[in-house]
Image (tube, rainbow, N blue to C red):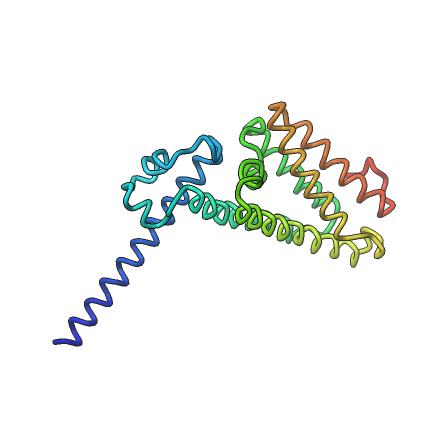
Length: 217
């Protein structure tokens, strides 16, 4: 009987743990959606409580304050963003395919006329100067994103698309900067043209390095 009671107690604890994890995930997801639209500063914990349909005590059981919640949001948004970019970029082996990646990015941003900017970039603007831990999390995520571009560019080198002496790290950083600058200006102008122009210039430079005419697609 004692073993049965112990087993039942452990099963109940396991269910509670699973339930708690589900509640925590729901809170983070709701906060991420709100902060993407309203910004970190414009989103209150009461907003998150209402959107995630939890009580205040439930929220504070998982997050001691808003700062802790924001850090969890960064992890979620980062995982989502990197997963999407990894899927898109891992298949790119030619400049034509990289141009297709560019087209998809620009077209997707055009659907919202640049509203809300890059999910990661927008978080940097709001938290980097106020939370060193959050800034480091974001820095690490952008480093992973840069590594995806570095992997792509190494494939380009092996295929002879760009010369072997090209500085892969610098080129990858330039691509990240082109994307982020494009997001920011598109958000300011509500016009996707700046994003298209900034990425096009980066791709034109890659073509130049490989000796391909700039006008080529």
